[in-house]
Image 1 (spheres, one colour):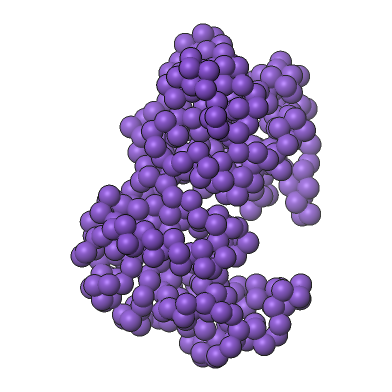
Image 2 (cartoon, one colour):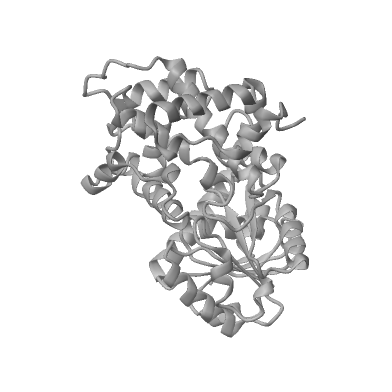
Length: 401
């Protein structure tokens, strides 16, 4: 167990518990400690706890090397973190954040244990990226104190945090959690408790439509990536990004959103990606995904690129139209405000522009025309235009008018 030291960062000095000592849990714990809080980090696997201790210390030292923290601040921050092997040690926590594996049964089990240990006023939160916060809230007493706090990886560097109230969450606890996370230096957006929340819902076409184009052999992954980077201004193309995230992780999130949305065609998983996962070609971490990687993680072009049937503008327009349509749908159904939708996509997945503002630039009517063209061609519900997008076009109203 790490000792506690004084000094370092300023903050509200709360007692925070993080359950799960993986990359996300470790990052959240470091963020909380850097803001001046005392943090307990728990994992049922001792090796995970020791790896967490090493990774947090290594991360803090990197901040020192870059001149962002002094050696004294590193020691003080690290001294605020306790690495515990008994869950009972969290009983005096003000806030408990769960960050274990994405398994709903495991999460419900750990929340029942947490609930039996902490006081009635302790706020209990999940960092889940895909499960219903409302359903998880049922596992605890006083479910009005349960909430979703979704950080993005790596939590220490990514500014965005999605705040997802359950149906049961009280307004007071929404305010408390939002204020606290913002005091940690994060930028919050509030999302309705629906599959994928904001980012993981709206971002799905960036992957799925790129996969569809490749499956139809209208362009190669490399050509699609180039189009989105060169014309769209995205930092990474969809296939590069899927390899970076891990095709196994990306496919699981897609499948989770698809099933939770009652098999909505827009979120249907790709057989192309599923087969890569079956082969163990998960991306950079396995050495092969949509691309092959040498020991220096550079792309090896060992296969001839298919002749592109779609040009780069057609590729970019198609994927971007699908993204804007998804953002318009989320706005229409009240998933989040227009400002939070655009903020989430620029800060959460580094899109070059907010999608709704981008839609205004392109023209709402043009976006509707593009969607209708796709629907006329394929006759699939996947390509139906969002009613929210169509209504704006019919009334000649932009998203920010």
